[in-house]
Length: 67
View 1 (cartoon, rainbow, N blue to C red):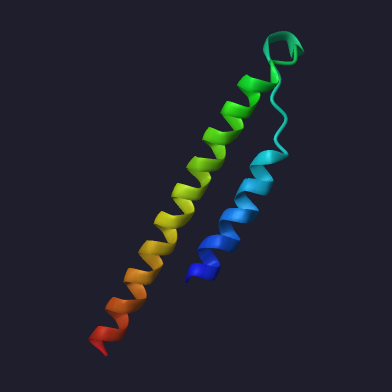
View 2: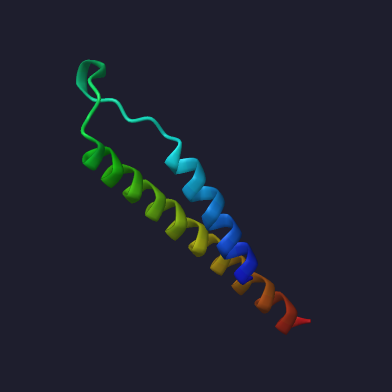
């Protein structure tokens, strides 16, 4: 489970790092602001990934307990 969490988070952060953010009329925003937006996107991806894995884990354990 921990391997899936860490591996998935690394993949999601790597994907969100490669996102290009452009401002209004294709002006490049300052690096600080684009870094904040990328960090928020990465944190959101990681939170969703951990939530999905938690639901899968609970589903598997409930299924094993019933049998």
